[in-house]
Length: 315
Image: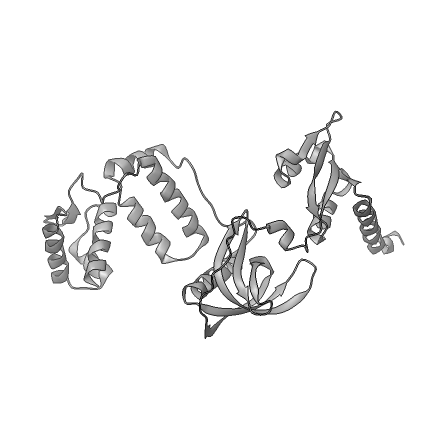
């Protein structure tokens, strides 16, 4: 549509400065005559476009014209730019690139120069650690399914190692911490569920569409207990000072107490599940479970099973 092209041309000129009529014609797949008519339309609407002749000629918008940015300050625009860049890095979608151009177009050349000189005060990188193109493909496929209200099917492996076939109606993608999740209506359980993307396998977008349902709010969602059958109980761990950097990365600072001998005591409510045991075992000899006794005994049993696997090396 012409109005969309005019807006896109305005944004491009504000961000790029002088652009030739040929480049504009090629970019928007129209003739140069159409571009000249577009420039006349923009001038008539109050946007001060000027034409320059010669080899380095082209069209540009006179300084200090910018798109209205209402009451946004330069620092607020910088924050928006940082957030959009972060989403663009995690999601392969042209929309975020276009949005970034539109946001930058609200800045004058002086503002853009100031931003470049100051550098990025804050950087958002929404690419989860250890997740490559496969995870990004899942995100893009699910975004398309959400946009077009298409059902998706996949195999899901829960934290207890049980695999199930699911057909769901996707509602929203959630990036929490360093992990992606999918909120969807599960046709198997007949209720809304949240699925961790790393546990979704053989994802397929189906041709069958669905009518959107009102999804529950995620603001007060019990993330931890939902995936572990609510086995929440009070526990106490003691960590050696050598692994304090990991302890501070893993646990809430309010749960951590530094003891007189330099060790770290962690007290809090945790779910007794595979994640918990895997996390504790990863600390090796640098962790001791003080309470409850049942968890300490299970740690001993698992350590013995590990030793059994290596007995043949003693022969």
